[in-house]
Image 1 (cartoon, rainbow, N blue to C red):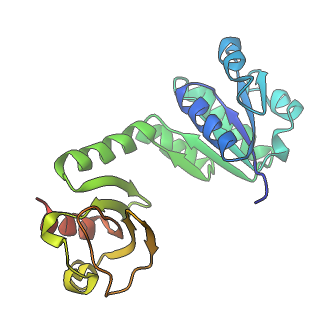
Image 2: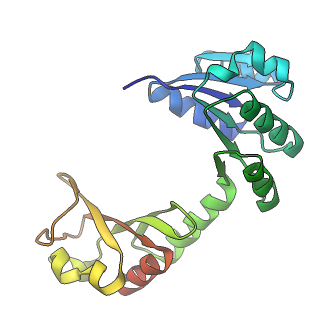
Length: 220
């Protein structure tokens, strides 16, 4: 797999978490922050770190930001700095720009600037946790768009021993089981004859409404 190069602007909790994981996944990561202490803390973790103000065009030019495959704006506490950094990364020609937003308005501004993907960490985590709290079978819940969701659901006792043909989530609710994680391994694209057991985890994709209907039908 080709190593991808990332530049992360802002090394707070969000930016440092992304950076650590990207390095673990075998990628090259440059971290940029004005806070010398944060930069020093990650200097032995990330590929490169720089103490600099990423809202200045010359700074981003000097670190070669335009040569990176993806720029991540992880600034959360300074909306003006976040917007300026995103603008500069886009103008410098970074192939893909991802930015953290702290509010809907902040996100809309970033989208209008042409940011390729806007992330709302606090909001998205809140949505996922709420769904997990009200649905005992739900292990994870990820919105892949405003309409579609991927959910991981623990198989309840009411479905144990039943085949996917018996459960028929697509026919009854419109959602599809695209994988089953069994103790012995993952089954990708399971067929109608695959039988569910109590320790299985179903990976289901569908609209938000379809997923909710399926959840309600199997709720303990």
